[in-house]
Length: 293
Image: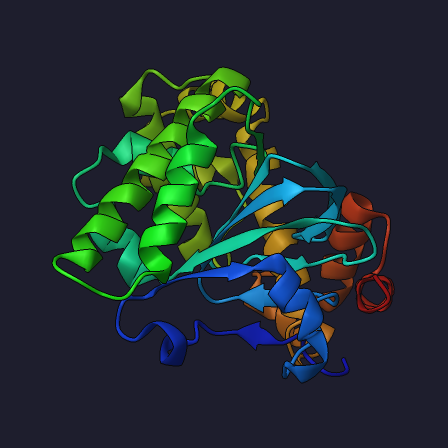
């Protein structure tokens, strides 16, 4: 299958045990030749990344698609997503990166529905546009200054508090730009559904199977998926299967047959047909196109 794409780990040597860092995009662009990977080629994150573009316009690669970005665009990238920069234009800004442990610790006191909205590429666009007249920029500048300053009394708590405020401000904006999920019971069911799919893809791709695991009717599961995603439960499953397949295809020396079995296909030919029907590409064609993105 060729070389796997790079897995980018959080560099703890630069931020100590904090698990949090703020990196200027210009610094990444200027030092691109010094990295073990090429930032402009697809790579997979092993941490969370909030990219805040402060000027310019261009695009950013997220899970096999290019998205347009500009000044005041905010990108949410969750762990394991595939992404790439495009330095051909004048984009400037910052990557606010943090580990899963930091994520859990920082948002431990917030509601499940709030945390679920934060980094959920299935339900929401990964991009939020920050309005010109909004204090998000002010709170980011406070966070950045505190982060750059020499550690002093309670610095760690101050940074975590400012970051929580910044995320909350972004969430206020997101709720105005996307639909707001008010019924937390539906969110919880959808969360369980997503988790069951992740854990059970090798067992079944049947919506009826997962409805049974959730102890609800297929009709109820379908209603929730249509309300939250405007998709049927089967479409949700298919989308997650394809995303998992894409990540596996570009992530190592695994043969298509091994990936097919990992995803619950008894015959690799059926997997190829399934993949092509939903992407218009065979697995081999997809790998070639992605490597040349």
